Amino acid sequence: MKKYYLLFILLLPMNSYQLNACTIIFSRDANSVLIANNLDYSNCFPRMWIVPATGDQYGRLCFGFDSTYTIAEGGMNDQGLYISVNALDEESGWKSDPTLKDWETWEGWYTSGVPDGILAKCATVEEAIKIFQSYNLFTLQNVKFLIADKSGSSVVVEWSKGSLVFLERMDKNYQISTNFVTSNYLPEEIPCYRYKLATDIFEAHDNSTSVDFLREILSATHLEFQFPTVYSNICDLNTGDVYLYYFHNFEEVVKINVFDKVKSGRAEYLLSDLFTYKPYVAHVYEQYFSGN
Image (cartoon, rainbow, N blue to C red; front, side, top):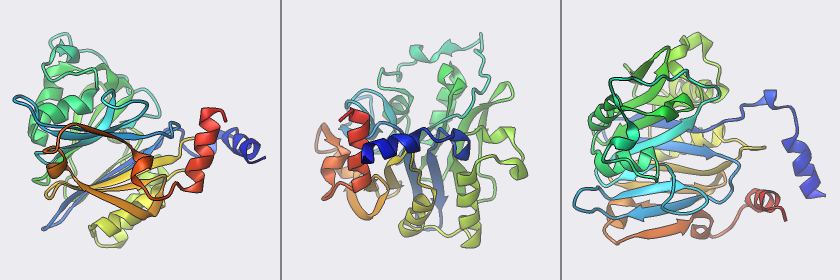
């Protein structure tokens, strides 16, 4: 009965909420530089892996699905650089620049995806921007990226109105990225409720920032139904601390340190194994999507 009820929910009209939904939030103050992320997806088996530093690559922590060391959707490296991806609700209109080489010719390109390459080869937002400016990246047709580093720099990389845009946060101490091309809209035209909600919470709290504050925003913007929030994280880019949450259960947190982890060698984890309890909603979704 529960399984059929879930199926009914999944078949509800989709115009009541966005199909693609991930929320990435940058926030800084005089003492900290933080990134928070809700990853919303139909795959209910998120994974995390550690890649130690080598002679020409930085050590890094990556998040992904299906199998480890394959496609990273985001993560953080041992230099305090962070990157994560948003899927777009509609195609951006990206076009190839004939004067540039394709992304696959860059030495930092790996079959494990754009975020893994950036984390392996870049230490700062500025270095990452230079890479994006130098190569044709066809996936900008369907995605955009938020990148931040421990100095407090942040930028959203997206394709807008025929050109590559590096959207800065201007005079705010925060930056938000969801599933639309931000540069295409005036502030009063923003189409995403999650984006507006997160903005309103920041403004109502005088641009506050802390792990607990960002956790509250993640809780307020998490999604259920067809694309649930399967994991969340908050990263401190100065200390290397990462706070992990599984299936929008913000009552249990697993804390790790990237700077320490990358020194301990290669490792991989199924995120659900890191937590004491599996929330009921995770159990139901896993049963449904595995066909049991």
